[in-house]
Image (cartoon, rainbow, N blue to C red; front, side):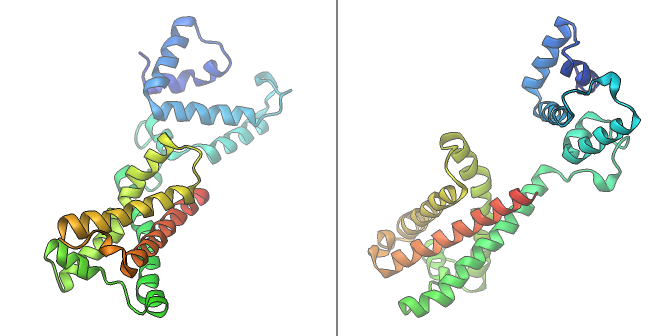
Length: 246
């Protein structure tokens, strides 16, 4: 089977349908197994589609070639290019992409901060005004885990900044793309907020903490539903905005 470098070298001929049958079959087989090369070819196809239909390869002068390369640089992702070009030969170290784990962690912290801010605004500012009481997760953490004081605050922050956003990015959103691809971002976030409410009100409060399920379906339960919904929708909005502006 062709290597990634061989795929890059044959990309133009593949687009021109100028590969021998055996090379063409090996080329396509490689694309089915290598997501980065498949993405690279999709970007190449997009770039070719930007050219006027009447322009042929023989008619491209140096000015047009420069324009094509500029457009390719605008749409090509560095992680794809770095995959196809030996390290250090095309991209300076400062331009090489960060490992995926670090990118996911950074995005999780970003959307987690948005979600936690929404929770705190509702739980500590809106809830006392509307309901006459604040939502304090330390009570639930103490009941379920036996952790109180500053340690409970640390657990709360780690949950809001890492656990919930990572679950949204790595579990909820991929499952939504697989099972309900037409569901908008706010629909995915809304369902995720409902799941968080069930997790808090049943798994943590009842199964782990020994409290009545969903806090006996009193005012605290419905305030918790609103709070977790606001948290999830804020995370979803932040993730959607980040992707739209990336």
